[in-house]
Length: 208
Image 1 (tube, rainbow, N blue to C red):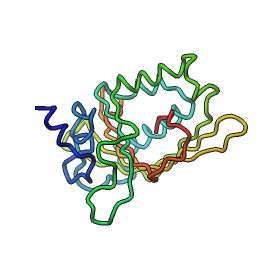
Image 2 (cartoon, helix red, strand yellow; image 1 turned 90 degrees about the vertical axis):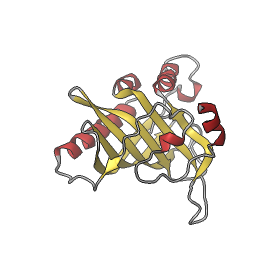
Image 3 (tube, rainbow, N blue to C red; image 1 turned 135 degrees about the horizontal axis):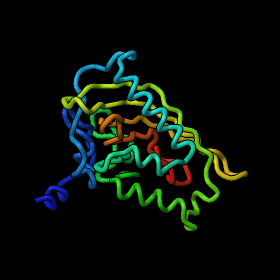
Image 4 (tube, rainbow, N blue to C red; image 1 turned 180 degrees about the horizontal axis):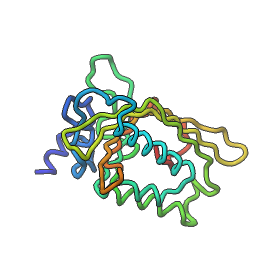
């Protein structure tokens, strides 16, 4: 049954209320289907402040390339997705390339990427890049599950490597699902919407 569904899946269309991009992804079968409800929380709401702190703390971990610690802050059923953006007509109903993604990952694949960085074969990151993740425009939404929050944010990544290569920027929007695990929040789903159809960064050996 799963095979026939995948065979007829034409790619990522704009999702409607109560649905997620993970449902359309190759590796998204395991992902949580929890979605937002209502309007954004007030900026002084405790839950919004918790989500804001999570994203800022995460940005500092990624800047410092503390990737193993970052893995500890994601759930075992994480789905990490960045569809390929395309330019389409106004009412086309989709703005991503059918069946294609820059990232379509689960925790295992993310952990293998992290493990590779510490080997002698990680040529794209030896010497390592200098990174700065700027996070802004954070909005937090409740869900039907009390232990989950949906969080929107905008991100600008600055990346510089070596002495002669030009620096690079990646601008994107993100929709995250945060899950309360014990007394801390963890990332359970991330969908990244990059703001360009042609990526100008030399490689994507980064996390957004």
